[in-house]
Length: 356
Image (cartoon, rainbow, N blue to C red; front, side):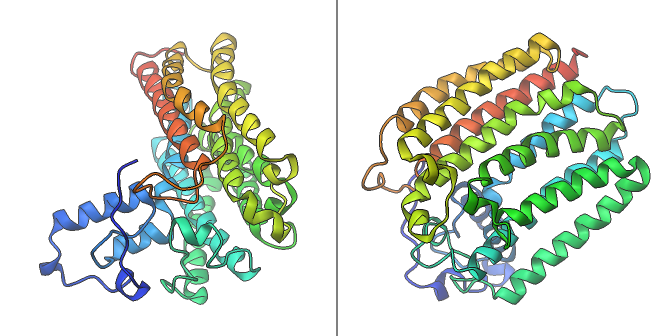
């Protein structure tokens, strides 16, 4: 990862209102947005503009995980009977907003129950919206409410055209997103957060978006949703390995806390390796077109990531490492980004040439 200069010395500097438009040229604002999307942190050495603030609040740097899930569904649906581009666009926007809402609600609920503190990783690798003073609890709750209301409006439109299955996918995703951190279930605390993410970013997002686009759901799409679900779960596993020393004293029993760091790192490696095996099986059974095998080239990125997971986390970050104390999460995300991109590229080729 690229070096990141040290942040301003105070939250007042970091989150100060942006200067007037005349004093903040478009190129400067664009570079600030890119920096936020690359590091999850506010742009260094300059005040936050409105867009940068929203990108930080919503943790937009991780939204590509949802964009890829939607792209997989889109490319599998595009030539199918019943395909409706307008409904696809609505469904795609719906899952992105659902991810935004999930990020906002996670920060809100974890702050409310006392999990997120100034010494907890969430406030160390990037500013916590509430604890940093960037936004109040009330305004954060209001932002989450607005996003959910917009998402609900999209759901109503999709339900009018596609019926109750769309409602089932959407409400299932919303329920799991809320239950991930919110009392009383708090799935993350009970070793169920990792299966939660697999279900949401695999079957619910991919299959739900596909169904909204075409109005039916063959069994192959359920199978095709598995590989990317494994990649997203590997990222969360890496994050929970990083946070295990902080989670265990708080009684937050994520899967890495339950099985131990060594086994958790090996399990994450198994998930990343399983992605390649499942992609090949999907092609064999006809769930994915053969150009999806292009994603196998991501093994070149897996090699250094595999090495990182084969040994304990270093005592200190490399110079300029932007998201410390996250380490394994960053490595898994790099692999997921490469493998997801190549999978989508393979599906683009298949869609362009009508390969099923």
